[in-house]
Structure formats: structure tokens, C-alpha cells
Length: 239
Image 1 (cartoon, helix red, strand yellow):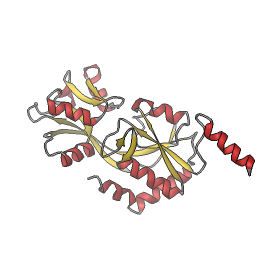
Image 2 (image 1 turned 90 degrees about the vertical axis):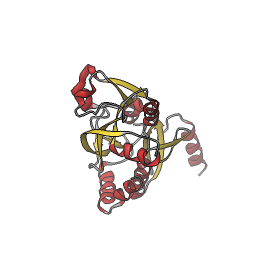
Image 3 (image 1 turned 90 degrees about the horizontal axis):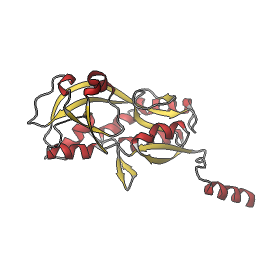
Image 4 (image 1 turned 30 degrees about the horizontal axis):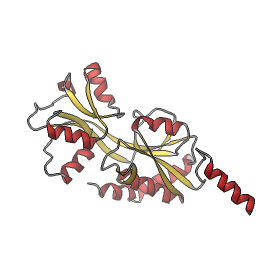
């Protein structure tokens, strides 16, 4: 008994020691915004990502912990086995070889504009115009269409991006449809026009193959959450 206690104490002292075998360690990217994630002193405290990750862990019979990382550190955190998985991602958004769950979070990408700005009818209308973006986010469709004429105006978060628009610093931003709907709902002073919906998708969860979550166990949990309506119930909280 004493030997086991000493071993446990030693593990707790080792930097980077692996989490307990019954714990699911999920990434919480600090550049996420509501309705995906809310942070309190860099600790995730609410949002779709938190609720969905916790539901997956419960369905797997696991405890859960979150590791908050900068957006540009998500791939490295997962590929190095420092965390098990992340929710609300797509294969084009992060680098690495992962086990991907079924698509489960429907959303879309759009261009939002200030009411005083010319209407955007095509992504080509954004050529050489400053566009509000979030640092470390990838916008593959916009990059494909505009190339070097995609003029990013990066902010740390979408909330900061929206503040810049309210101040008139930028007139356009690209963001998720769910994000725009959420912020228009909670902030009646936010006057933005949804100009162009240019890509619909369903986001997924990705789990590192070096982690603590076997693919079959993950799929069983996620599939059951989708099929019994639990995922839809989580999403409905933020609409």
C-alpha cells in the first residue's frame, strides 16, 4: 500500500505525466468564442465544446479534464499526445493524423458586413479589402478564391473582431453562422448584415491515435449521443 502511494505521488510530481486511465483530456482552444466556448481566466467555463465533450466523457464512463491552449498550438498538443481530442474541428482546419468522429455539429461560414458597407455578393468582392479574422483560424475557401488578395485583419477572438466592426475599424468579417446568430441574439446593439453564406459543413471531433481514447469507444459514445438526441439538445441551448 505504501509503495503504491509513493508511486502515485511521484507521478503527480513528474511534469507532463499522463492523465489517469479513466480521464478524457480534451483541448479547449483559447481562440474559440461563444457559442463554442466561454473562458474564465483561461479556463473553459461554458459553451458547445464544453457541453459536448463532457457528454462524450460521461457516455464513455470517463472523468474529463480540459487543457486550454492557443489556437496555433492545437495540432501540436494533439499530435504529441498531450491531450486526447478536440471537438468542433474539420480535417482542413488542423494538421495531423486523427480518428475523426461522424459529422455532428451543422454550421456554415459566411461574410458579415456593416450596414454601411457595399454588399458582398461573391468572395471575389473581398479582394484587397481588410477582412476581420481570428488569429490561427484557417479559411480555406476564402484563401482558395482570393489567394494573396485575402487581406486578413487578425484578432485574438471573434468578440474582439466584432468590437472592431462596431468601432468601424473593419467593415467585413468571416465567421460561423452560429456565431453571428448567437451574438446578434445577446447583443441588440450589434448591427451586422449577413451578406454571403459561402460554405455549409458539419463539424466533427478529432481524437489523437496516441491518446487515451480508443476509436471504437469514442464512436460508440458519439453515435449514441447523436441517435438519442443528446447532441441536438446541446446545440439547442445556444440557438
